Length: 57
Image (cartoon, rainbow, N blue to C red; front, side, top):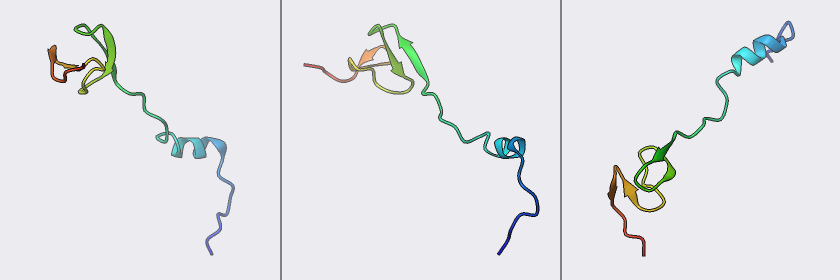
């Protein structure tokens, strides 16, 4: 069974885990609908690239 000879320091441990984090979604303001939306996604009102692609009744 492999056992480390020395304790891993806080700095080394945190350097190793530096890439493990939550990513923030890429949110942009949509001028057509006047709301914020995630890039490359349809807005809540059904607009994409300034055109209405989904009818909301």
